[in-house]
Image (cartoon, rainbow, N blue to C red):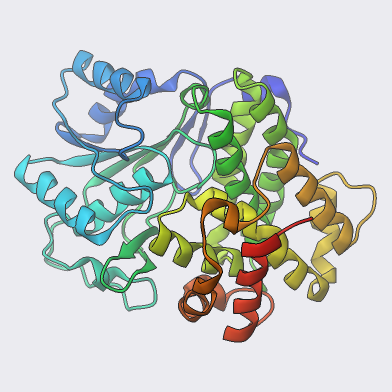
Length: 395
């Protein structure tokens, strides 16, 4: 159970770990001052196609104009960012003479902005930054642009690290890219930016954050820093997600979810699991909304994983304020929460065909998230999990 008080959620806070974080309702109005402090004079605003026309974009541009900061906007980022889009964004960064990036929007905007940062102006191809490769030597290269991240959904938790999921168009697969020298100069968490998010997107992105917290915590590595953030993030999400969906104007619920999402996003530096391994590849092929895909698959993978990690089930149950501490009670609670916030009960309901299971399983086992799942799975076992998710993910 989280001990965070509602009054604390409503007040501005500045944190320094793991990167500088400015939290608080209304803090977007500080963006001009923030750019000036960081020496950013001509940022490229990177957002996703779905966010481009939303009110917070006009707010951001107005605040930058008041501070006499020039900018351009690049919004050709898909819900599942593609490598060709990142290339186009890099060209826009260079041709516009930009000196920084402001990534604003959902997880795709975060990933798009970070991916453009990785490749802009240094002549290094995007796939040289693939997570499992040795990071490129940046000696003699242009430094990475300064990066400000502004999430407008409480879901991906992508605002504090350089990792980004990008679709390799030719392979039809998602891969994680990153570089240890790229860190956001500031993550700005303003819960008022999430108030206009529709109920279904609040649910989908919130379930994404819940998945991050649970999967990160059960990764079988010793990392008490990430574990602590995963459990506190899960406690906040468990408390505030149903309220944020039911009461979209509730700023405390929006703030609690934004902080919970951020904590869960930091936690998954430890790794993720089969929910993400499968979801990444379904998203790459079918362009599904990532949080929704995760939410549908989550109970199926929990039924596969939790029986082998009894030592962690009690901590999960405590974070979710359950009276009984068993794998069954955790799974039942998660399923009821997904029902409460309106998550569909199968991938078939979002038009994923059963005949993709073999192909997706072959791709999912190659995903880096499959390597950190607490229970090693074969291609055949992953195929069974996919088929169950397609036909009947939860009762």
